[in-house]
Image 1 (cartoon, rainbow, N blue to C red):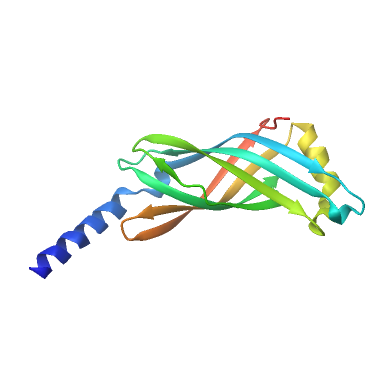
Image 2: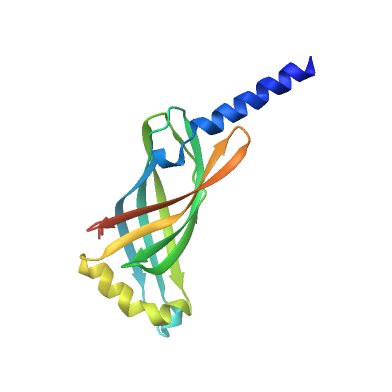
Length: 156
């Protein structure tokens, strides 16, 4: 009696993982909203960026995105890091959005504050959000690397 049950669970898990194709997820940056709080000394300043990331699931099964670890790059230079624990259900062949916040403060700003301000104001820069997306499956959480590039997504 136990063997058929284990066989059924094993086949279901295997089928579920085979149905999730990492190439069938796509990511798009809808907008980035920077916030600056400058102080003297510069190490007391804070730069934050709120972003909206759209995630599309082209798989044939519904999946649950349990959050992401990410970094924000401006013209290929990492300027901030962040983590989202927001959970969203992605229907089969559907999409959802995540609200992200990245922060840079303290000593890391000393070198970056001028460059970040110039590039955010410029509007002509390339922005990239990349990291690992954490998807819930029958056998646990799997991490799938992602990257989303955008231009002209800065909103004030």
